[in-house]
Length: 319
Ligand code: NAD
Image 1 (cartoon, rainbow, N blue to C red):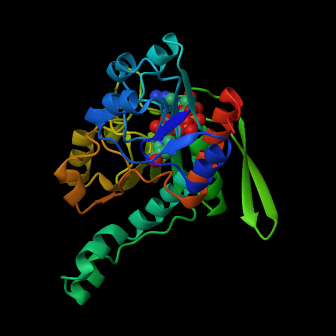
Image 2: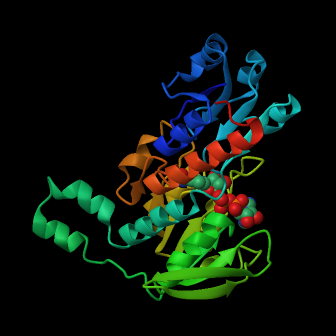
């Protein structure tokens, strides 16, 4: 059986599939040629990350597809229900990337607190003494309060790191059941904390020094943070969005940054991927990364391994 891993797959995942007798093609096919390539090459499984979309048109045009796999969590780039109606298996790897996304978020929290993004950009051409003065008002994370909106796998992993750094964590979720968060500390030390999420965002927004959002793309496409929520936040708050473009309204974010109400924001995801709007990329108070939350060797190995295992379980070995 032929598998097209159109956004790549780790060497480990590829070799596990090949050892099981599958042919794995990793040459990228442009989105507009996807259906044609699938039919022409007799491909029966399409694996994607977040770049390639598998919509109804591709599904209709490729009657030979038996499985669509998403290496990662959010499946908003696949018409999942439609594919399943057509008898196509749709799989993803929800837990494999949580730790990597959480580490990226922590990197952004530290970087926002010390203006690293803007400092990196300006060091080459700026005057050293002026820059030293401009970046003199950094702040520390320890003792500050982080609000985590969306307390699922990634939110809980972020909590684990933030608690380990001495931050106070307030969780917000639709579900209010208490969660036992493990905090592995290194040197074999372990701690835990029980966190009970709040269900009302408005009731806690004013208490937060930092906010990291980890909800999925909302079914109706609406933003979870827009002008109304920005107005309720503490002045000087810093935010991270490593969830999905659109869960923070980009127009309202720019306004909140320009008014000085929000001190900084890090974005790993954008409404208009892969062409985010220029005002976001060039803004001195915004730190951007190109949707790399899960882009670590470890996460990609776990994702490749999990995809291979799911496929081999579903279709058996072919060698
Ligand atoms: P999850 O399903 O484990 O957790 C999501 C949580 O959000 C759930 O507990 C849910 O109840 C809560 N939620 C949903 N809507 C909400 C709302 N309006 N208000 C409050 N809570 C709400 O998902 P996860 O594994 O933690 O992943 C979260 C998201 O992160 C994914 O859907 C994906 O979009 C994104 N993600 C990004 C990257 C990246 O590379 N940046 C990588 C992986 C995942």
